Length: 414
Image 1 (cartoon, helix red, strand yellow):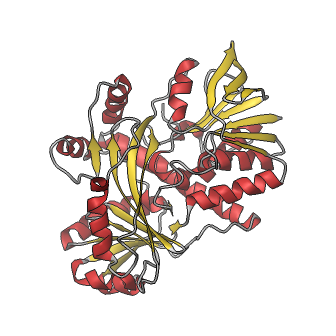
Image 2 (cartoon, rainbow, N blue to C red):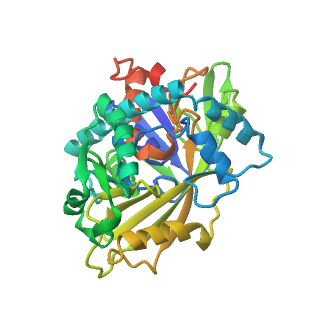
């Protein structure tokens, strides 16, 4: 069967890979000059089921309200006249009850854990280099009170199957000696030994390269403009290069999925949440990070990719604007410098801002809606790298009519 994959981020490329394995003829369309160069480029690079808590939690409404007045809030709201913003925000707030938050976190963790197992299958099958570090991720806290609360919070995931180790200050520093300069400011941490890190964009490019070498068509620099339908069928897709016809289509355009789906009468509650990241060269610095970590006091995540350090922070609900200015990075840059003063060239940052395709539940859409040959794999939010592999397998299983490891009814945002 000829399948067109619309979108060349990590979600689209992993979907293409799973469908290619099933013997389908794959054509992938990506608007940028290379795959994996938008949201997949600037993320924290963590494959971390231990980071599966949903953002739509009982604490979120007050955090968003405070963000209207206070700087440096981890989750920020910037009101505008965009009706899609207000429609999405109301749906998000409805998910902020404890019962909804617990259910969404449980389903998100199950998908994330399953997805990591599929990633490992892929790595056993293919030789892909992407600066992987599989020594776990450290979530550390600066005060005893925060540590105690963090441990209690992480026990939720432990009950779902996440491996945890509780570390005191000395154990944190033994695990990550690069934090020695701030050792006295760290009370302890929660270590998730099965979490891991790596460059999402390098993985995506390598996987796309494998597909192209084995017969798949990867078309970059080509924008999807519209989806043409007749009754319950998609008949073609119009792109900047012309018309594309296939037997089946997969919409994996992240934030772009919302506008296209509205045009064909299948509106999806996906809205961008802006994230910021710094990429710092390690240079000749002697004490770079050795594993991924999250400063839970400041909600700043730090990962190492080969000779670079990636620093990420902030979630801003502010529409489709990708612009940024140096002041947007001041806080996260100061945290990175404090934690790893000899870990990177802090005066040579590459600044980036991108848009995470978020749903109110933080869970993606996988499957069909009213068009029989249009499938969705989109809306993966802030841990798309973590959830992409499992989503791709679930999609391929559904298209093939095979029993799946997870019930899509419990995954899909509705």
